[in-house]
Image (cartoon, rainbow, N blue to C red; front, side, top):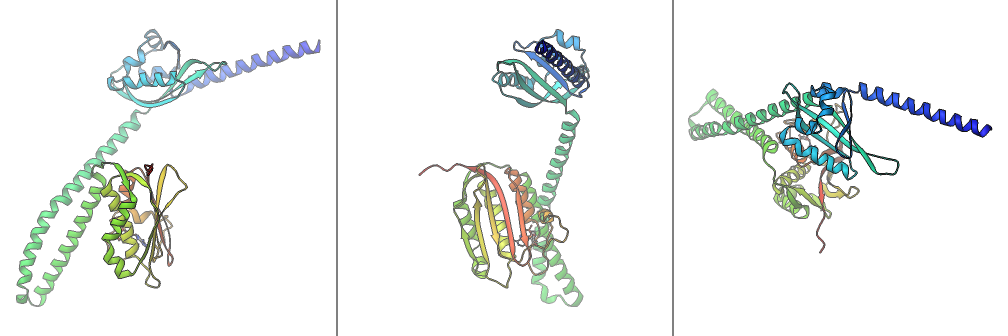
Length: 378
Ligand code: ADP
């Protein structure tokens, strides 16, 4: 008797739980600012949340009545994405994609859709759930920013490139004047020397802007790069500075990475060049180049020195040294402040990142990451 009452109470409890879930589910999908669509295994739309009307401009009835509604309202070039999403979903996987579609008014919109399979209690796919967010304004803003950045980059490249010719002309004229220098006296001589210095500085600035613009714009042709070949080349090209500083350099076995040879060379040439430049005269310079093997997907390459270290008053985790023309040391060490800005730009364009740790009076440790490639055996 008791057990029967108990059973019936359990059933009632289940029913009230089911009702509660239904209400919760209903109010969630009714109020979500996203379109929720459920299709059965034959592709028929069995549920469409009210927000789908807002997103598409069509009434729910119009959507239910047209079995091809979503494919037809999609942008022609993005229809294959829909089909791919359904195929991937049918194989039991989820699929995320960004796509264009047309609102009833004809306006082109952007949606971000996540399509997932729904499994029944036997573990078989019973239907497909798609949730679409309106990302139109985000995509438009992103495009505007990209366009502005791109025209800014073109402008910077053009200005810096086109300034090179007139600067060369001025330098040529100054050379002619310099040969006449013995005839220059007093204030005239001082003025001429000022002009020569200013022109040299201008030429170096324009060169730096051009270098940065190239690091940002040049197309990368990526492929396998053997760091065990590139780093010795870089060391070889810095041999004079290495001899002058009597630096001890150690290079451990390095990985094969995905990159562009010339740019990878440029990255390490800058880092090793800086390690040589910013040395501490109180001790012999040591530079270690090695990899952190803990990450199997990424190749983390470290260039470590026991140089003077980087002062970091603003507590900005050394962010500022990666900005164009920013320098943490001035005065006795020559430089333009563009090298690390280029390194950061190039590393990021390779899909990696650059980090630095440094202590004044002890040294600095730069870590750059690339995609690691498997080496062929033998
Ligand atoms: P720069 O032409 O001044 O060397 P970079 O962009 O290469 O320009 O570096 C920016 C600044 O970061 C440098 O001016 C220097 O203050 C600091 N820096 C870079 N590398 C090192 C290093 N290995 N040790 C100490 N300071 C460094």
